[in-house]
Amino acid sequence: MRALSKAGLVLSGSLCAAVLASPGAQAIGDEDNRQPSTGSSGNADGNTLTASATTTSIKVTQVSGSGSGASPKALAPVDPNWEPPACWYEPVATPEQLKAAVDRLKKGGDLVAVTPSLSWGEELMVTQYEKGEGRTSDSDGYKNYNIGKDGRFWRGVINKERENDAASYECDRTLFWQDANTLPDNEHAPTPDVLAAYAYDKIKVPGTEVELKPAAESKVNLPTWVWLDKATFQEVKVRAELEAAGVWAETTAKPVALHLDPGTEDAETYPSSGDCEIDADGSIGTPYSKGAAERTPPCGIKYLRASGGAPYQLKASITWEISWEGSGGARGDLPDGTFETTQDMAVREIQAVNR
Image (cartoon, rainbow, N blue to C red; front, side, top):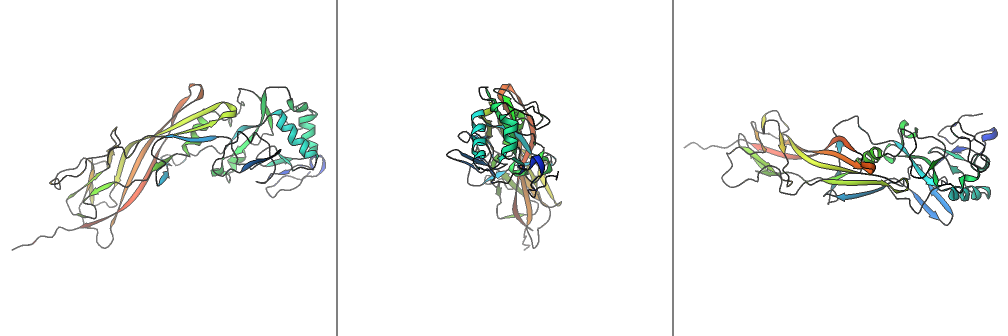
């Protein structure tokens, strides 16, 4: 027997009907409940159900926050090793839907996707799911598609953002049965923490630049005031729900600090750490007022050397604290996220005239 490869190699012998699934291969699922997500492609045309390996029924909704503004930006996790889930299992078909898919297969329909990378033809589908003769190591088969039982058949789904990772093919369990109101006993089950991590990857925050005074050009040894007006930054909450499994999670990003990097070692920041706290009303620092040029700002920078021919690159990064809560009273934290903007800062020497 020849091994499968990503090239879509056809198998010989009793598995001759099995090939690797392509994005256009026929799959099964409750398309009426299926929700689009980034990279998903699925539709229903009469009794024909199609879906790619990255099509998910997870519904993502922004519950609150200003991340849907004119220029929303994605967060970068502070922990460089953190990644959203590569894959997970989802319910995709009732017994009746599975039977209908196999009946179409008997009439010359397309192969049925049973894992993110594997499709089966008529012989294997009938043997495993109609006759109830097990063809996989984790199942004894399902007599008459389990019609009359309360539950659904599940299969793996790949995260579109990680579809080229080897980890995305770890959800390779062949299409299996799960009783209603239960989750698979598997590390890739869609538990609330998995949905929370999926929602994290969908959070968008406003990419607002900080206010500066002086704005266009600063002077050596004179403080540059930095601030943001009230309510510029508010909590952003995103909900991810897998309705067919009765599981949900809401992930909240709360802005907690602004960090200033002057773009040169020849500068001082206020406070000295460069971390300006974000007030409860979403404001940062204090707006500059006339006559305050030589005072010390609560949030700001003092450049000690002129920038010369090229301006300094002032970096302002907002830290967002991430928490989540979900179905069944589950809750937890995820790595902080940041969003960084860069602004030009031209710094000139103060010109003095001696008479």
